[in-house]
Image (spheres, protein in one colour):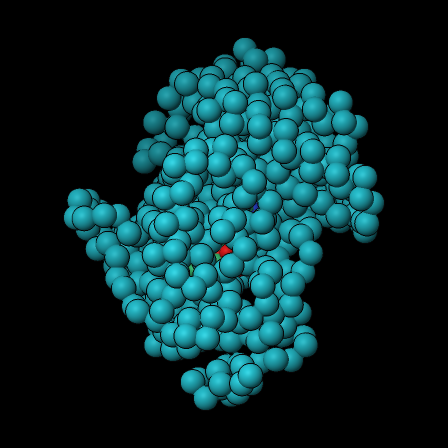
Length: 457
Ligand SMILES: Cc1cc2nc3c(=O)[nH]c(=O)nc-3n(C[C@H](O)[C@H](O)[C@H](O)COP(=O)(O)OP(=O)(O)OC[C@H]3O[C@@H](n4cnc5c(N)ncnc54)[C@H](O)[C@@H]3O)c2cc1C
């Protein structure tokens, strides 16, 4: 048996390959509560040619390779469960070109989206998919990440025009083009989006951008129950008001935010909302209607027209919910559920989540990208308590069953990773799943790319 690290060093350079315990342990776990699995070697490619060389070699020797972005997944997606090589794309983090006149950017996968948006912001542009963590573009593409802005701008999948991808055997392909309309052949770009590193390694992406909105207004609305808040969400969407963000946070989340931040939110379930437009007049027309809808659904406290600074604090707090909760329940493990349903079934899904949490006597809270029907419940349990963990997993499974029953999906944005594989046949049916397996075998016949994820082969 050859020495893997030495072989990789001969393909790249010595400082691109590490077997140090610290480096390997840093690439053993994501942000989920799934068990870590330490890779044998960590590799940092610096060019597409590096990625190609590593994959060609790994494929020849049937060595697992798991791509790694920023490691912020919460479904076990980048955990190298079969060991082998972790391919950390962090050094390929350049913005290659900003096509300002076309509202596009071409970027390497290791660029972190918040950092990229800072650069783009100076030109009045931004990339809207907005997961809470400072994820990499490659990781966002591979998980089809979404977030607070998806209700208006779509998920990562809706904002990508073309990719450069290295296949398992080292071949380099380009997909898509820079035209916003594309009708040419099979849509390979979107085959790789959401494939969680199991079909190829993304080494470059051309993304759609949007102008930063000239006028916006943020509001919060507090409700007596989560059910009332969810009903307001449906009515706002049904009225065609097109929020730029529409988030539901339950009573526990608001309580924790009031304790952990300097926001002074009205107690009880809240909607955090933002509306944007090209003119103040358009906003002035929409906002009174939003308040009316909230009031009709029993809103007990409504605060609109928050200024730029307050708005920034509001969204900063929304993005810090996860960390605030982790701080609030020190030493506990957690699971974040992730389902999505059509918006007409959203109130039913929220009511179900709320009742089930009470029935199972669970500790946690609902934090939901409400405007697009995506529900997360963050549940805490004592570390190492197997019975408590089983109950939390039962909750997650029942949420998935419910979402499927309502015409929804087993995962709105976190991906299949490790935990959702058992539901793939239920969502897609045996024939579609068999086709997915065929595609995987075609593109990765030796099964080296992120083995153990998405599909049970
Ligand atoms: C506090 C917090 C809040 C979050 N909020 C949200 C949210 O609102 N919405 C949301 O969608 N997610 C959210 N997430 C989850 C996470 O941020 C996203 O799933 C994100 O897309 C992961 O990106 P990453 O760069 O960390 O990728 P990683 O976790 O490193 O990897 C993700 C997957 O992509 C693969 N991969 C990475 N790079 C490449 C590449 N170049 N080519 C091919 N495959 C690759 C990996 O193998 C893995 O399967 C949150 C996470 C945290 C910790």
